[in-house]
Length: 255
Ligand code: 5RP
Image 1 (tube, rainbow, N blue to C red):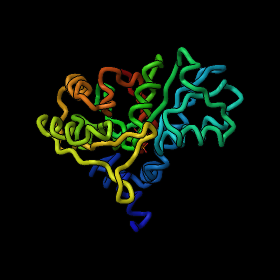
Image 2 (cartoon, protein in one colour; image 1 turned 45 degrees about the vertical axis):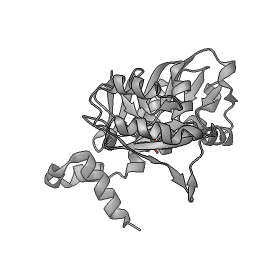
Image 3 (tube, helix red, strand yellow; image 1 turned 90 degrees about the horizontal axis):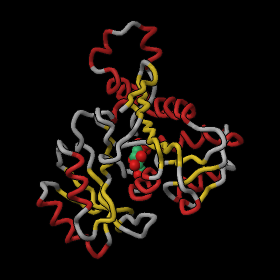
Image 4 (cartoon, rainbow, N blue to C red; image 1 turned 180 degrees about the vertical axis):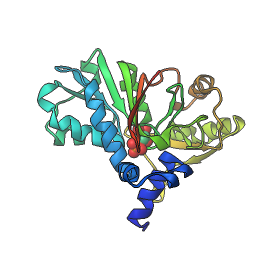
């Protein structure tokens, strides 16, 4: 079990880099935020993008959970939400927020979600939480994708985080061979000794070892492999805005 101070220090060093050692003590107080506190700060900031009276697209994961909790506080201002996973739907309902089926909604102004990695063009790796396909579907009908993340997620080149690929179970090995030929080392995601099963009844391959210099091309190539349900590269439709939590506050990146 890591000591809580060590995890604060790790989050701090990720955000500020080694030069943080030179900070004044008052700045240190501001910067000493845990990763959860950074997530909470961006979740709060995302509320500014919520349009009154509308239905909001909501992502999945620990950062999205903080956003749902914030949304709960202003639930009377919105009509409801479309959820990108069963977990998100349950959390929204627990706050008394109406959950709409996407088939009953034609358009969303905003979709708010976290990311596993985001580059300087707003392109993302998502799916660490296993909800990539529904996230992509809900995001596809939204005018704006608001990404909420702590600064550790911002990268120059994506691929350090294993790229999730959702597959039809019978295609596991066939898709693995294709991913190997693209230079990745794919691994079947497991949970309690069994393949991890998505909300769609499918499996996930996590593709390690990629350096993603051409995200749009790679997204298209992997999408074309027979048996792939979707890939966790959000490149063709990237984020419109990223609210990035840092020791010096929430930064807004526009793409
Ligand atoms: C879930 C996702 C999440 O947005 C991503 O994994 C980031 O999660 P977290 O906010 O917990 O770091 O894509 O499928």
